[in-house]
Length: 180
Image (cartoon, rainbow, N blue to C red):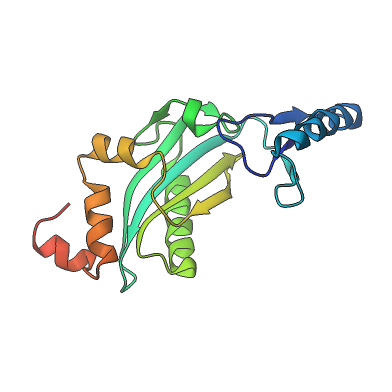
């Protein structure tokens, strides 16, 4: 299957999962009608992506400092399968169905992405796990909608720490001061 969607939408509006060429044609026709609303344009095209049916979606919120120190704030497993918008999903912290080696691969990938992007502060990475394979859906070098949930669940003031990192503090310094 494939997912057909505008390149930018809130709440999953106008997204469709298609299985056949006829369904694809219908989805493209419906999306084309949204061009008058400015949802579809040259600057905001239609995206067609492979859809991992039955996959588990995972959000990771992490902190990285200017020296490359990384702290995983939370690995959050979505209860619904991948494709349900994070604003409409239920999640668990820590993950309940993912084997430890998969969580380790997710954490390793998060560290590599944070390093490659040179993030200082918060990073959110969304993954899909299907048949033991870990796929990166997107990485956002900023706070995401999941940060408040992760902070409340873990008791760690992620935004406060991220702010301190962004003004030059390091995770090692903050740990010595008992911040976490």
